[in-house]
Image (tube, rainbow, N blue to C red; front, side, top):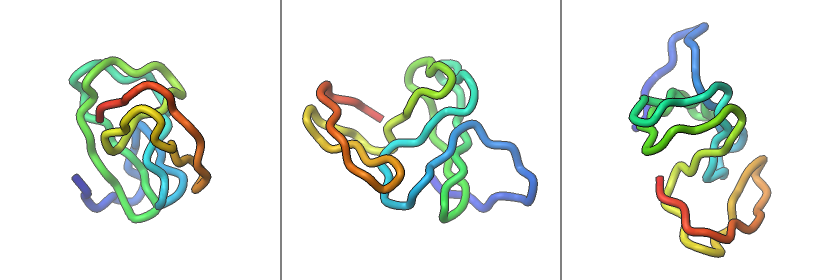
Length: 84
């Protein structure tokens, strides 16, 4: 889901590059909480399936085993399957 961000609005995670498929949490997130993600194209909101520790990555789309993770616009491998 995408929404407009008000100037100075707080967020919980950051998407660093428009092509990335993961965002980085800037604070611990509780299971079931809504995560406000600051993205290059505006704010996005997702609901956390599980608790997420500080600075861990969250998948923005489902990722199958071996699918390249994109962060900073660069690809890397992520061995286990990850659900959004």
